[in-house]
Length: 444
Image 1 (cartoon, rainbow, N blue to C red):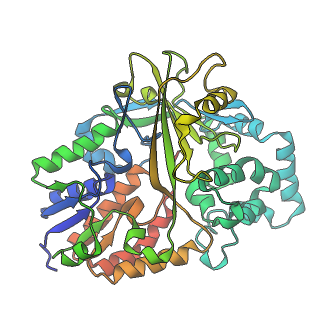
Image 2: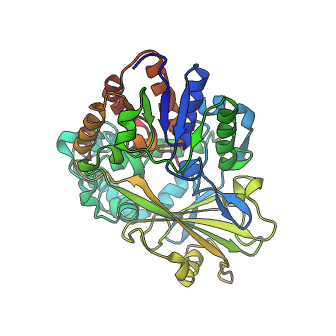
Image 3: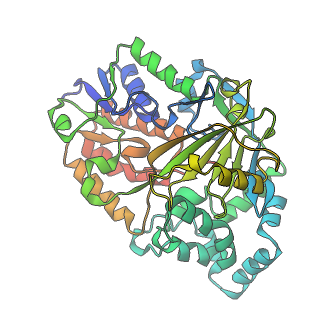
């Protein structure tokens, strides 16, 4: 493999597109292959009611890695007001949480129990604050349930953490790794969350960034630029192990790591996306409702029109419901259960009691969430050793590295890999370094 060998990029999601863009900018010859019919991956649009809707609630946070905005500054970005709501005990709280809302949502009894937990257990406060330090301790993966209960007490665990874990993964929290406490459920330790909640009452930037033409426009921007640069994108072209062996050059792989190492037991859970129409001016101006409780099938409900005017319909309001695969499996048809969805939306206060959703469209997204069961880290390491033995394959991005991360993280990983490759780094050296990306935090 020479320095100037052509590079194969597998996958044309945000990771693959940005990797190809960066490689082209560095003067490398690039070819892209994608198993699907279009670019975008999880950012590919879903057409509903005449508008290109996102596959869930996507946004770029002001604290995001700047490279994404640098690469796409000509695509145009809007600064949008953040109008999120957390639905808890049939009450709506501003999200991200303010301190008063957090304590009200916690409730007097839960607050008291947490206080007693600190006072009666000498090591409790240290464990509470060591949430960050313990995340990657694979030698003692005590499981999500014990890890969180030790830090926040049983009542807070049962009220806030356990329901969402069971909803997303369909397993008892004792089967889930303690790393999920950092990688998925919370973007920070409870102490950090409280500090942020307090600081938000003083200085708050309740905004997010969003492409003027929607995420579909962002994908099109990358795609058009690559086409102008002469980079071929081959759709409906799955890459097999034989294809990898036959390619005479480096391979940046943004497909699923489990496809390269199928014997290591890296599992996933999928996500149902339900787009639904309602009469115009039914819902209000909330952009996203966060619904962690087990009584509701959906975990998030968003309004595309609150993200971009490009996703606004003149005829109706549109809701996007995200229902984790969890206990359902991949074959549930929620379009047959509109009455129950209506009931849950009304009970959550998302739509008025007099309103009913009309047209619905279901899209199932397989393998969205890595299933971090206890002991997953050793299986992940074994999978990477399998890939390292291929000598020319550089796994990248959310899927290639079995991560749960944000859009800007994917671009950052692509950039790091391209830098490594163009500086003469080997696939083995890259794989030896990727455990640093386990520290990436999901922002919501």
